[in-house]
Length: 415
Image 1 (cartoon, rainbow, N blue to C red):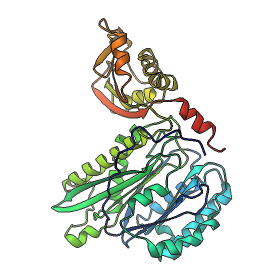
Image 2: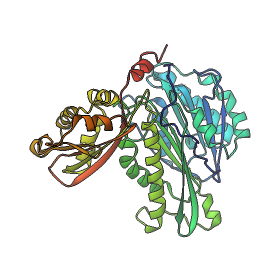
Image 3: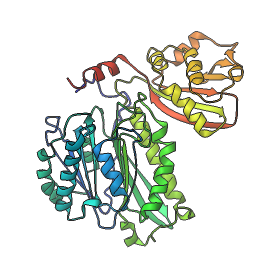
Image 4: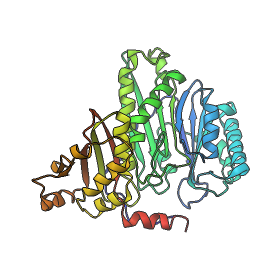
């Protein structure tokens, strides 16, 4: 795999400590799928009655696991999740489908559930057949030794070029009953989510029906994971699954079956906040990055238009390399706004790098000072704000810069 020169400069000093959640247990193993001496297989075991919701890549070359999850999601129930790293099982034809079927069958037997209650995900190299026979024999043992307090182990088992596991936890109240939401995800390269992030798994003990959970996940994906990008490349394997075990019902929480109820307000806000946290963590672990960048677009005709303009900036190689070089080249921002395809008034366009206005009314700001703005560009975290002058809508997108290390990592990825 590609060589990573160092851990991300944004890696947390201490990882978030996720509490156990009733009805969820994990076990991991070193199956030798691609990586040696590190866990690359995860099994999550879920209580009976667990609801599940999910969003997946919109790629036209979606992986075999994605197709299987879409099918099983229709039932809205889950008992097991199997994830492997090192091989995406994408563009693998009949062999890929057979690997998924074998994995699901063995997991269902190990956990004691129906095949349509098993969800699978794979991440890694595209186009290489996945030999499920190397790891399905491990599933019965994993099911027996699964433990609830193992979120960090689970997060590490799904990493590829990530430099640290990405974890988050939140608490919320549903009619006075406290529930927990835990999540972990992976992603560092080939990231421009068009539904979710590379792989993301969220667990809660809340009692919520699958259709209500689906509505929440679909809504919050748009404002979190779909507002994050590393390199503009949408994966074949993007999967975000949210599991609600319902165990909070034992503590008095009445099951939520109506998505429009105010009873979900606190839970919904906590879920969105957790998803935003994870999305930002992915952007802060972008392959080879040196800068974390927030693009704030305002004055657009609609939120979607504002997001499209922000994405055009966040996915521009020539702009991202300028940021890596600490060059306040606002002309490249102008270019990106113009190529977005969304409405923008050239003669009202205004741009700020941090607190510094660099362009106003369609031209360089009269008080622009190159030295001052260049000094701002040396910060590790940057905010670039743009007003396109055609409306009142705004949106925010998170990304990182594009460095020599990114090229090295991806040039050597299969070496």
